[in-house]
Image 1 (spheres, helix red, strand yellow):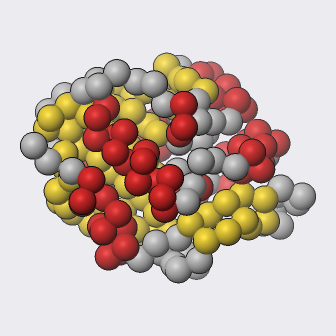
Image 2 (image 1 turned 135 degrees about the vertical axis):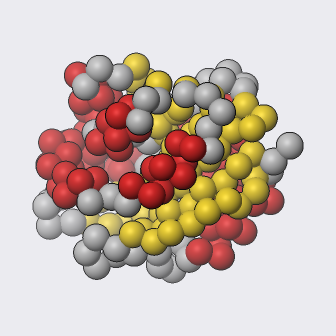
Image 3 (image 1 turned 60 degrees about the vertical axis):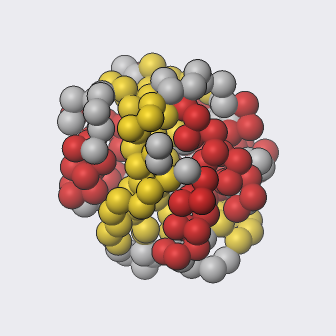
Amino acid sequence: MQTNQTIEAYDKYAQVYDEEVIEFWNNFPQTFIDKFTSSLSGKRVLDLGSGSGRDAVLLRERGLEVICADASKAMVGITKKLGFESYQTTFADLDFPEASFDGVWAYTSLIHISKNDAQRVVTQVRSMLKPDGAFAMGAIEGNTAGMVERKTMPGATRYFKNYNKDELRQLIEPLGFTFAYEEDYKPHNNVYLNQLYLRAQ
């Protein structure tokens, strides 16, 4: 599952990361958030891999009850200060009850684990969703996988698994989901794949 290096990187550079993503979330396509919100039958949502919670804030502004979960202690500290119910947990240790969420929002969080591990997490996501639940997935477009170091986080490496659109659908749909919507977001050099799924009956 998640590498210790990835979690340690987010612990060490939580504030740096939070500042870096301000512009990203300020310009994030509202259409995707609207599609996710309108597909929900209730308001209880899990932000899986919530990071510093800037997307959780956007979801809360839509009237949703957002529960945050992240492997980084520092990130959980930030979301708690923002007033969220927040849990420190790795993907491997997820322990939420079955059918306890109307939606799961996993934006660029499952990219930090291998494809095989992601399959296991998506299977668990399905079990945590109510029968008519919605699952929002965000990934970075590409065909690479491995540890990456960024100039703004010297000495820290994070694992990234990039996907193309078809690969993402082939990962998620066979695990009990129906594809509902997609759009791309290109804030700078990377293309972000925004995909929405509904839990199949």
